[in-house]
Length: 275
Image 1 (cartoon, rainbow, N blue to C red):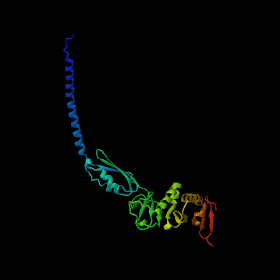
Image 2: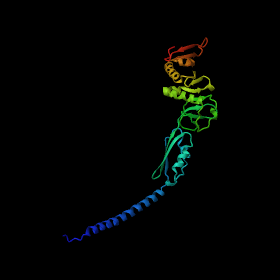
Image 3: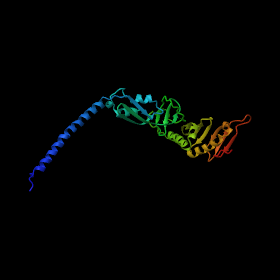
Image 4: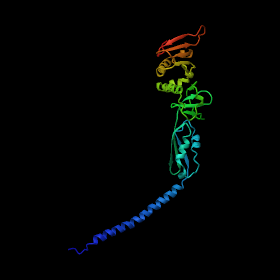
């Protein structure tokens, strides 16, 4: 038989647990001290700078004014939710993400709405592809977009709201279709005149030409216009064109400016511009 008492293993186990507890307590106290010191350090940090990303049309200073973050504010005192809500009051801001970046930076990343048309007449306002009415902003970026005119109620449409009138939806559809065909065609259009429900008229930007678009089959007519103009623009005849009419199936009816002597000349062209 062994001379070691039977309760020795139990005593050793209890001793190890006591030593483990004695070693754990200082570690726990140290961790608590570190957490307290870290919180005190964080609570003492102040804002050094605000970084704005994604602002193209909106001036950065306007974004900072909207954010309204007090200089040298305590980093922990800045309410990121409130900052985001203030940014979203600007109709040009589609979305905003605001983050703290310790030790002293707040980052603001915005996604802007892109205007697709200018609302013609009265005060300057824009509209995006979803029909959101946007305010005029004093931007360093030149907004080169077509005007939209002659839609009932357009000038009374409130900024920051979607103007969902049927005529506006059709006008936006014309501009989106033009972009889909070719961005050059979109920029070729200077105005979409909805004629208060009558036949739609476009006006070109480079050479001022009236283009009768009519109603219906708009994407097909725009493809025809793009093909025709791509050919005629390479010749000297473009300056002689007074108006185009796309209301007829698969053809462009051309009205020419008067020659030096005689009356205006009419003609037709296929989509490829063959006279």
